[in-house]
Structure formats: C-alpha cells, structure tokens
Amino acid sequence: MEAVTETLRQTPRASSLVENLNFQLRNYFFLRRTLGNSYLGLLQYFLNHRGFMRSEVPECEGKSPKELLTGAPHPHWLELL
Image 1 (spheres, rainbow, N blue to C red):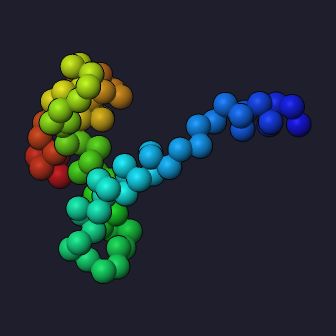
Image 2: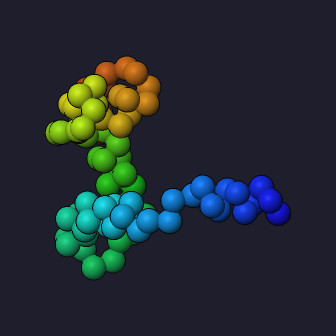
C-alpha cells in the first residue's frame, strides 16, 4: 500500500500533456468524422517517421522519433512506404 501511495504521489497529475497531444492531433482529424484503424495506423507511421522541425534539444532537431530511438538514419517517410 505504501509503494502504491508513493507512486501516486510522485506521478504528475497535469492535463497539459494530454492537452498538448490533443492539440497536435486535432489537425489530422478534420479530414474524417470517424477514424478507423487503417487511418490511425497511417497517422502513427507518419508521426514516428517524420523529422522534428524544431526542438528545445538541438540533437533532436531534424530527426524523427524512430531515428532517436534506434540511433540509425532512415530515408524519407514516403520512400519507406
């Protein structure tokens, strides 16, 4: 019980993370009223392979989340499709 209480105390309870995610995804949802698995899969692929245009961390700028995770560069996301 103490471990759970301590974990809950240390977990940030801010909605800013969720609000930021919703704000960024809202731009892609205007195209459709309903979102199927195929559209969400394509959106996930695009967001994981597109490079960051700007970042507070200079090492992340111009790299995609996949490049940051694997440490290896990859071709443009359209070429990978």
